[in-house]
Image (cartoon, rainbow over all chains, first blue to last red):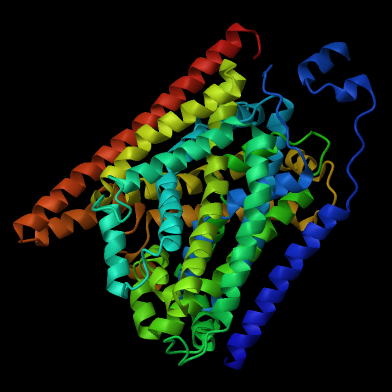
Length: 53
Length: 550
């Protein structure tokens, strides 16, 4: 391959693969958020929450 | 409040489903062709710039709009945008987020069915012993509903129905048990098949198995940067367009998937992860298969000629023949992997297209998931049959142009304005960073408010008034003649009419007249579907008012 094509290709493949792996690794490594512990936090109907609050 | 209580089974499942939504056939067939036509390796500069200033912002906008709407029990764009903009007309803009998916699914499922059929033909050895013209003729015969190799009458219709039934059945199984499960199987397999074919693409040696070039010739052709092309607005427009289509933004599917994310969960990191996964499949795998393999066996001149008709021709008319240069067994396996990869890319996208309609029916009319899924299948069948039966009369292309191209740009432009200017960038920003597992760079507040809408406006205007031959220099110099690919010229059918005026052969004239009829009929059909959906949204709105939900 000619040098300019090789440089552009390797740089691009490296950046794209690296960032894909980095963000996926961050997703896997991030612990899941704790489940909401109160009744209100657990209620996914905002209309009802407003009424109660 | 909606009876729709579905949710994602896992975070990885959500990301794979979102990435699967974005990864489509274009990653393998469109990207490499766009790159060779627009500056080779230099194309990657505008491409990545557009990803950073348009793609990522749009992903964040759509993910946060979806999660925001989900808090209020909305899982499709009409009422998601309705919660964000005070003007009651916004929900009709949101109709695009259902319409686009139904219209695109109608022709996309047909395209997907080709890949399914070609998988079986590859395994069955149909292409073994055929020369290149034979494989090309097979494709023409196939889309013309000609004689079937398997002896199945109307084989394309049968495969279309199988594909549609499969999609509908998976959708009817629900989000976690259907869509997510397919993404968890399909995406890893897609990447595995892609890596195998990319390895083959990187290791072609001239003189072996009939190859006339080393793979480096193809890689040079694809990656040698032509930096002078960076001055051309057409190249930037092509890059912006590619980013747009590859991420499946402006469709309403991202909103729909994100609406099932819990309100306190992250969207910023999820969007980045799914977005970069799509880029990996497109740039790393997509760039290593089609062009290097084609040039290895056909040479630069022939491939340059073939890419003029787009990647679809290369993918279906040429590659099956080239794979058989590796021998009967490897040819069949490679063909199966290539079309299998395209099939997984296709089905993970078409499943996403079904979810906004299903979500809408569940939310607004309390339909059960199964009934809603089957209604989607029925609509796609009715709308998709013209693309199967009248493929050679431009129906397929017409759907693709209006629903799969123009509509996306229009909707994305309007949603970016809604998010940054109507909903307000401060509220919008809070939505993006709420629950975020990464630090979102502050510069994106500025980019989302100004750069992304302006870029989208430029893409839209560039498509509306495309100058002849993409010569912007001449156009700005005062000689602005519209190209036949511009939206304005498309509406007036100027290309077809010019061909009709120049034709002398009665058979050609008849074919062109029929094409003109079917093109106009397709448009009427698409407009009718849009108006019907808008009417349904109006009925749903009135129902909400009656029930005191607004």
